[in-house]
Length: 302
Image (cartoon, rainbow, N blue to C red; front, side, top):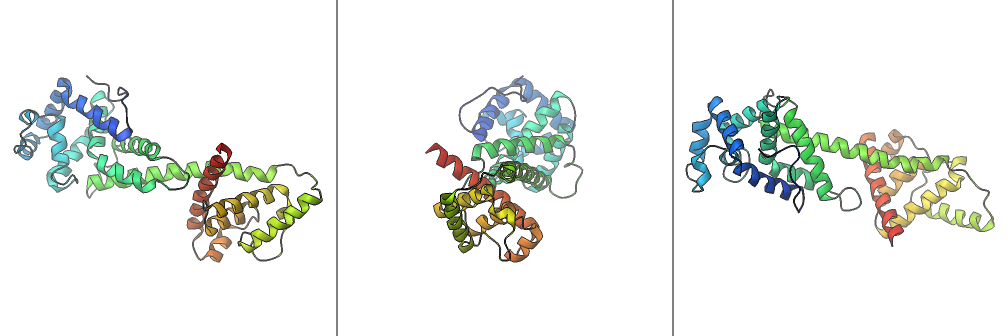
């Protein structure tokens, strides 16, 4: 039987590879027999067969993963109706086990949820920096598989497909947020860089940077603290200003970085000044750090 935990590599993106692997699964006699046994044991065989009666392909005459998927994606491809919920709950109960059949059940759940996984992936791709579509696609599929195996979904009220998608989205968002904060540590480390005594030329450049930063709103109103004069903070302000000029950062993105890393403005205070919440401000800063990092990488590669 095909090893669904370690599928053979194929060309194309993650969703293309899943579809290619699915074709192999449907052709596997052992997989067909296992799925047919599940449907009979769960008393769903007749209903699933009825759903696929009007399909002319040869596989509808024997129960297996392909007609099962047809029952899970009726008509327009969305998971709907009572039969779909019953079949999906039965698969999720099996996926919560610890044997090989649990892995296969979770793999079928993933295939059924690919349309939702694609929507989640597209929703998390950002135009500046961040991860690629395929990177987030891998993350989404891994999260979906883990959620399917968790045993949490089939016991909940409501639509199991909606619960699956929601838990998967939460998992992906948490992973991306953690990744953004990890990248931000590189900028935070600038605070610990040793300072050298600046010469007259550097002092003049620093004055220009301060003036430009003030004009762009990167230095909050009020008396400037001594830490803002360090070369590390001035260099960060220069980087932010350059990224803003290049269009990689918006003014709000620039303020989110500069207020935190160069002026140590508390998130609650910064959010109040910006007219938003502290959580929203922190998320903006995390996204801005990703965009700035990507802009710096492009500049270094040029």
